[in-house]
Image 1 (spheres, helix red, strand yellow):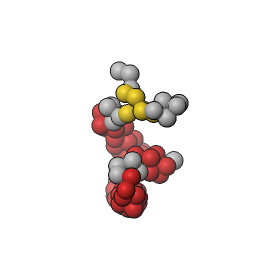
Image 2 (spheres, rainbow, N blue to C red; image 1 turned 45 degrees about the horizontal axis):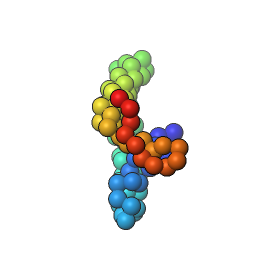
Image 3 (cartoon, helix red, strand yellow; image 1 turned 120 degrees about the horizontal axis):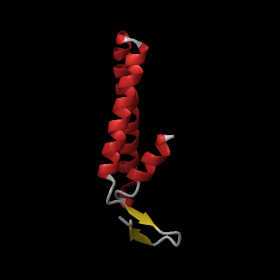
Image 4 (tube, rainbow, N blue to C red; image 1 turned 135 degrees about the vertical axis):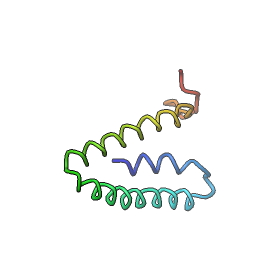
Length: 87
């Protein structure tokens, strides 16, 4: 579910360097898979409830950070013309 969203975030970075944007996408995706699995596996020693709770807290903090980081994002109108998001 997150891979298309991440591709949408990184592809407009520089239209002339699409390979670099997709490289960043793949690097972030597979690094997250590896590190996330290792950390979740490590927290399982404290019990499944603790592991799931810590995962939920990290995801909530990541969502809050994303809201802060992407607050000034430009949104395209239905006609395709970019305009600033209403605040």
